[in-house]
Length: 547
Image (cartoon, rainbow, N blue to C red; front, side, top):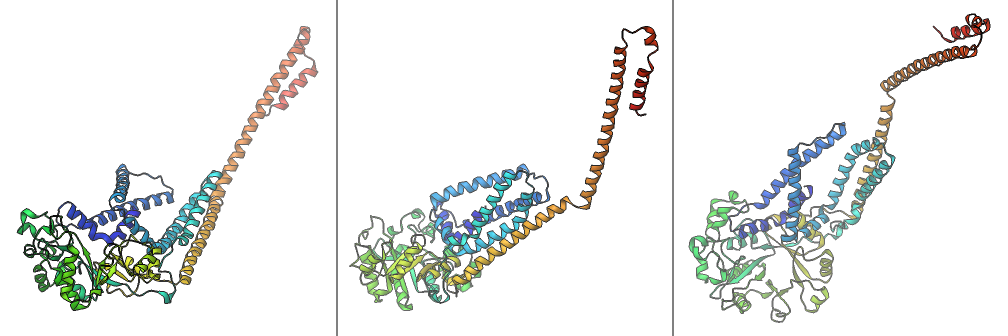
């Protein structure tokens, strides 16, 4: 459960996608699914943590551990849910495993310290239980396992190569920001007000999705349908699930593209808006590419265009790029302000723009093609590939970066730009989450390990002394003395009884011997035994049997 709580905390970067995937897939109103999952996991974690804490306490005080069947059922249910979710995650959301790996580059050093602190505290109980073991072989096995875990914890930093550990004067410049669909966390996405608010946050540029209408006018929209971000159910109730490219631009203009944001409040920001802002949001419509390019030209920003192709029945299916280029040229904007996704087929055709590659090829080939921009999702480039591009002067834009820790990671790696939904937050960040020189990090690592080792050795000695005192306290000595006296007394009485039985047996045996010896002698002798035998027998009997 600890793992899943950590998972939900670090994938907060993709919480918007998680929420919208459920909304679009099941055609529902927006629900904060991510917040629900995080809350449920948090409750389960606290519940199980309390059970574990109580179990450790009972073990520590030496009481018998009993878990109620209800708790057992909850534990089994939680375990099965974790297994099921892991399988589903591996199938449906595979790239989130990359998020976990990347998070360790930032949080690994803190996790290392936390694990050592927890293990050091638990050592008080573990060492005490170890001393109570009776079998020598079991003690050896337990000690070896304990030392293996301890050494593993102490050497974790050897496997954490965080880019935030670097010389103080080598920290790269802060990445510049592309506003993903505008300031889409605080305004309706892909609307004029969203891009205006992003411009006010001093972003480097905008990222937009461009589609083409049935009558050949490029417009700004991300989804293939209009269900999620417009009021199409009211205006065109029978065309709710139709592809957006089957509408003319005049038909698109009749739709409201901002009211949904006020009604559903997907980012939980509507409560902070002024009445004037709400009125502006409520009057937003689907904007054309020309309107966006005019804003880019006016503000001097860059724009990263992602073209989405229409249905095949749209007569501009094979001429989308031509129509987009025509609109861009009509605005008079310097073409180098346009980041254009290019490929081998249109490499020469798009030289006028800032050509941007999207699929990894070795940096030397990009340089040969005279392409010096690369756009990548955060899970597609390794740290070594990023460094390879940077060394070849290739500008990298990473999307989608929404959290402080992920932004800090790419800052330390030297990435030049990132695309984000939260430009209003990342714009205010002035330094990475953390940054240490190699010397400081090494000193911190070694200090934590040494302090932990000293504490554990102290615990080992203290528990050994406590064990000795438990054997030689006045109470145990008095009790031992009483037990010894009782044993000696019982032994004395036992020996006395044994001696009596032996002597009685000897007297009886002598009497039988006398009778056997006198057998066949005259009655006179029998009636009047010789003094020798009588005295001997009498003396033997009298002397040998104490009264």
